[in-house]
Image (cartoon, rainbow, N blue to C red; front, side, top):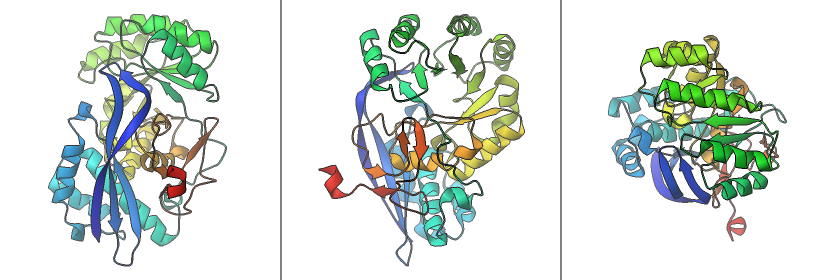
Length: 351
């Protein structure tokens, strides 16, 4: 087994602002390639977040410690156990290796990853939201109009101009369903409840993601869930299957991201645990290429909601995989039949 990796700079179509960071024009990711002795190549990706004290530097430092002899397309679980001996953190880096292992394993078995996991993937069934980042009202209106083909929007909030920004969105899309993501931006339970009650009066808000900081006291989450007129979803508060007991007490649903869990294997466990606990499930993303977006799409059958738009928010995704046609995810035109069903764009498409 050979392990190679490289950095990529993804450029945003619009500067990216959420409650805890502003004006990002680009994001760095790390692409991993695992090559088996017979030539099978597995692709993976890390999209590290400063929120979790990760960066492309930490990802590369972890990957440099990996001995490829400890990895095998024939033993993904054993390979992940080996990675755990190197670090108990570094989830984004582990995610990249996990995806590459499963991509290679699927290609060897001549099966898509969704089939290998026993899930399948139904075409014309899975709708993703399109995210509107925090911005000036006139830019928000422009973004919403550009996203007209998407049937559901996701709106970032958690700043002083939340009400002005929602008004701008509604000028462009008066009745479109919207999911709201506060990204830990409301700091007290009283402020969060006041904002949620205001959002509920809109009449077309589906749910609220992470209204309080993940470090908020358990009693504050319980208090807020009991009073909220809208469903609450945990994102920064839910990483692994082992977090499910608290999640069931605090939230109505959870947002699973592969870079938080350490890959598809752990993401599958986190979704199954949440469903078993009676929680609604969604799968989300960071700013990513089609490698990570396609990987997440292989878990769509376990999800009530999808937010897999991290690649379409960029202008230079160098890979092809799952696509979003009017907001509906499809693998019908994917360049690969097996594994993650992802490949690099042809040189002619880049020009």
